[in-house]
Image 1 (cartoon, rainbow, N blue to C red):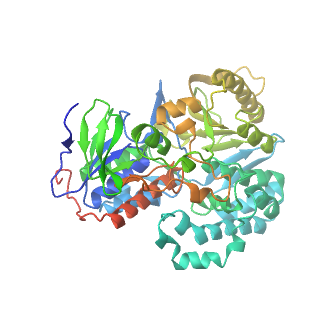
Image 2: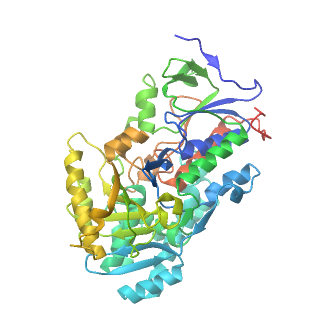
Image 3: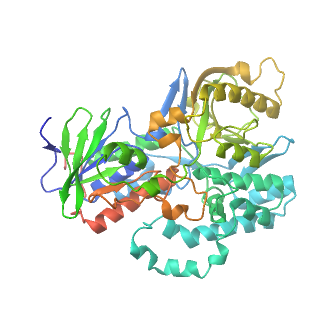
Length: 524
């Protein structure tokens, strides 16, 4: 076995090894480099970005994962911390229409970005008073301001988090948080109208949960779209990963692509072992002062820490949903579609019931995102790149994904042609699909190392979910830290960025780094 070697850094700088160059891993690398560490990132793929990667099919380009950008200020923050102007490296614009919604009964609704315009459109189409909609949105925003700073921006596993004025104020307003109601019950109470209840229930899927079980507190998610706004980046969603990778490189972060980590090396120091480095797949051993895992926390414990105790109770928590995604290159344009489009199931409860049973219903809700609507380079002229996604259960051995894909593909095409008014046409959607790739939960697990293909780690299907997420530091191995969608505060692009911020704060409070702002990549 090769002798362990220290990473190639100045002896005066603490050495940190990061496993994974997903969005949280990139953000962590940037923050820790700015805190004064020498940082090396080990990534099994050949590019950075993780789920924000890119898929190319002929002349069509697709983002493989998240398709909606919210809270872009979390990205800007990283450039600002480095003393750079965000707009010099990453640009985005706010959408006027967040999403175009459609139901089988012919109802159509454009969800405007402006809350007042959205509420007025709801009143015009569905007859729900605009003030009722605005009140519901305001209540979601109130929940966010009462709890967001504590539950989303701080470690829940540090005693000091709970000894703040924000927590004291939130405790006086517990009755406003809907902790004893499900998300669906909150929307039934506040909105009533079935189409609108279904529209707002959909926000549970933003963290892979079930609106009929998830706590009413999650109604704050609507605030991210209709209060803070929905955005599109120049160059599509993969541009986010490229921009942050570029920033990390300029700061002097070292990257090792196509390099798998086989083990987190530990050494007994005091009453607990300490992470002291990484063993790579080729048996090389790299020594570090601290280790950060951006890998799914389940695989981190199961594969990389075979001899260390694992938090079994946390790892056994119910997984979030996954997805079945069709990437379609479509050789014609459908002017009736917008950037983001939702075609609802007629029976939402049955759809989530099927997901909980580990299968797909006969009439799933279909999400269609078309990034070529704002990025002309993503498809040939007159054509479109369709990212077509339905919610899917996490992977289990009993599922037959070949059969499920074949059956669901046909039903999705039929549903879209019917609801778009192209049913029976000789030149409809079916004939227009000229490129295709399919990701199911097993594909997602294999490609992104998300355990069982769960997109958001664990679900939020009970009131204790936030407290039961894996912490951002190890309780069993000193010097080991975690970031990404499988740990606190959860999945989705904004929360992954926050996880890197929280992890950095936890690490630097526990083991301060000698702060040192690098002037260039040579200053390492």
